[in-house]
Image (cartoon, rainbow, N blue to C red; front, side, top):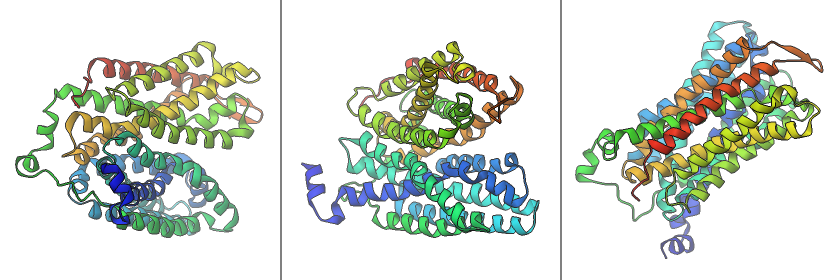
Length: 437
């Protein structure tokens, strides 16, 4: 009855207008951080630095996303209007600032000031916008959609995953058509567009009128006290399996383009990237909606880890990345691995807030979710770098259709990820206990 009343009432009490739409506006904006690979080489070339040097901007963005979510979780808990406004201002200002320092770097080739400015704007300032913007709508969604919390949060977080698929072709078209200096002009245009989208989301976002934040002892209760209401090993298990899932996802996704070239599908790399982004978004929505029907939401993580282990093992045993070119079955296995890991990577994100709410209640969920997102920040620094280190130290580059690739190195990345996935599965089985809903 409550859901029907919310839907049939005026726009001020409509759960779609006050929760779902603003969540999508916020997440579809900040999710474009994953479009970095579209323009990272262009930035490096324009400012006169190596791609490796500029790559740290993306790593810093993910790190500060996690850290800002961890440290500003209490701000989100107390005032979603303040936090969503901080998100809109920081994300847009970070984009505009990134554009300025790219412009400056173009006129001062090799300037360390330009590189540091990009680190600060894309990494730190945008990172703060990412963390607060990611957190702000999540609790609100769970409050409006009490019976389908997974579906609701999955819908919003799917927007974060789908942003890459939506924005990538638009960004590429802008780079192709804005002429000289298109790279910095693109950032300035997008800064305005995303600020408008996020500001509208900020204005619409509202908690239900019948929700009152916990008072008295609950208000003064520290986050650690809430976490200790369950065995602390339980929370450590959730944090670690979330961290491992992101680390493994980033390790494979960062090498995805080169793996696709190894199996002879270089001309389809763009299409496969878009399809994998769809799987990422689909995993966020599908796994979380599925979890709503389960007695223990942690079962979803067990499924994600088992599927990831099975597909990783199949590609390892068959040497799919090294031997895939011209072999249809091996190509299907490798693509299956890419799509399954992307879906599991997305599903891991969308299920975290609802899993935490099942264990620790709704009172401090934004703050607890924020602290848990620190795992994302640390994984942002370790996932890509782990894969890059393995590729650099194992195997050797060979020429394939005029492209230099390291099939053995990419295969070796799988040895690391399968061990980590097995550890995550064991954590899910033995450390994270069933929640008392």
